Image (cartoon, rainbow, N blue to C red; front, top):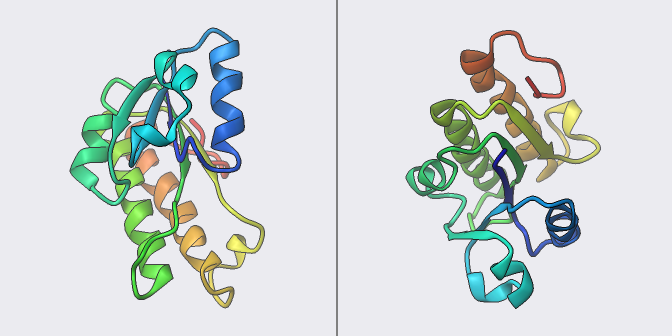
Amino acid sequence: MTIAVTTPTGNVGSGLVPLLIQAGERPRLLVRDAATLPADVREASDVVEVDQGDVDGVVRATEGVDTLYWVNPPTDDDDPIVGYLRMGLSGATAVNRNGIRRVVFQSSAGAEARHGFGEIDGLGATEDLLPALMSLTCGAVTSSAIC
């Protein structure tokens, strides 16, 4: 099984990656700058430098992936909701084009409201995008966007 992890230097990713390695996995890490990863993590992982907003880059980086841990990273977009939507579209496109069957999306409390929560609204949009595109690949999808 190939597991891809986005934002591997973030609060959750930096804890998840060592656990995957300890469990005997060799995760594929999608990161903007490989130099930000600890040397032992780089050696035990397949590292792909990619901006998560680069749809084609993310699609290439996730080829052959069975499981994807996706986090929408913060962006420099003038409108943060647009930035989150752009990142979510990138991940959802990769899931669809590569037939990724298992996705864990780290969202946020409040995203289920879908509007009125500022930046969190962008995460709600990604919650809608992932299952919608996964259903094209997987058939009926559960509310947790895992199939």
